[in-house]
Length: 166
Image 1 (cartoon, rainbow, N blue to C red):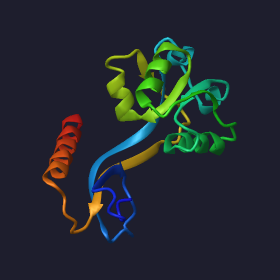
Image 2: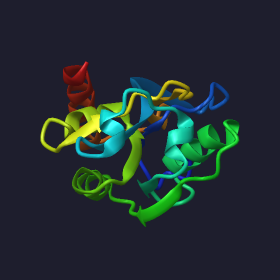
Image 3: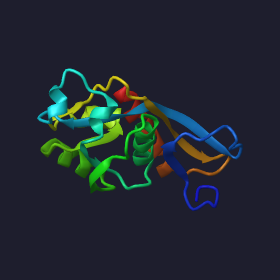
């Protein structure tokens, strides 16, 4: 849609260097983490491994989302079954609130979970054999394309918000 000029810019995961027609500005590096309610038994466990996650139920994004695919891949590499998904929602805030109120586990961006944990009873799980899944986010637009003042202002606001988080 960006190349077809249906969108002016994207804020998304960074793309590879082969996109010569696009300009990307790095925003932030982040990683995906497992989180749960502070009342979830795993939150108080002295030792948590990926095997401990196999019997748990999850609140997850849609099945083919980046987060869901990355979670399945981490478990598969350990020879574990895919997550037992009890709730699926494309709305991150809804998943965060459901996990905070239940014993479900969630999988999301560290930055999102850390910010949400300031207002919800959430905690990151420290998993001994967890394969860290990282991503880079960027603002991407067509090289040489006109960006309206409103688009430029929005890009500047996103950049300053990201800088405030770092």
